[in-house]
Length: 187
Image (cartoon, rainbow, N blue to C red; front, side):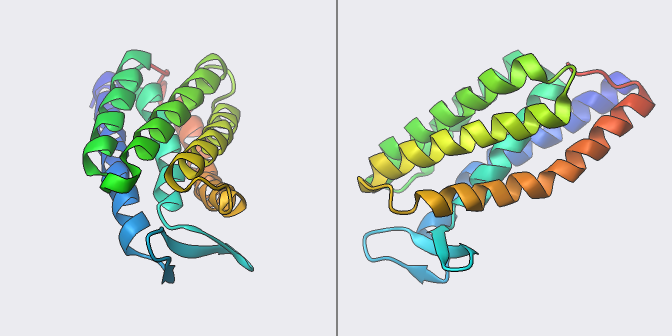
């Protein structure tokens, strides 16, 4: 298989997984957790004594997957994925949180894009870490404020999303090394 074909296939896989993370996050927040708050989110523990809406797990993963889409398919594809993801988020979010879901998704992914883009060619793993952290903070603040009018779960949101980013970083390090070995260049 040529490196171009391999890069495209891996990019399409990242794109599909990115797209799937959106309905998964929307479903989790309303349906899965150790406790579900009446007229509020379902919560999961993310650290001792700290709870967060369960959708945070997929949001942290989505930020990393968006970086992968851009690395394999390019900036234009990543921007189109963000636009499609915002639309999908709006279509799938529970009615009470549609605006919060779309706004948080759009602003966090664009923040991720803005931080990742200038760093990714020379500092891929650092770019994924920095852009994801910035994106998850934006996502947490915007979503919580718009959806619930409160930042009560901010710490939990940030910790929960950060766990997913931290779990993905060793894979990003391995991917960078593999790309160098195979001669795969960022799109």
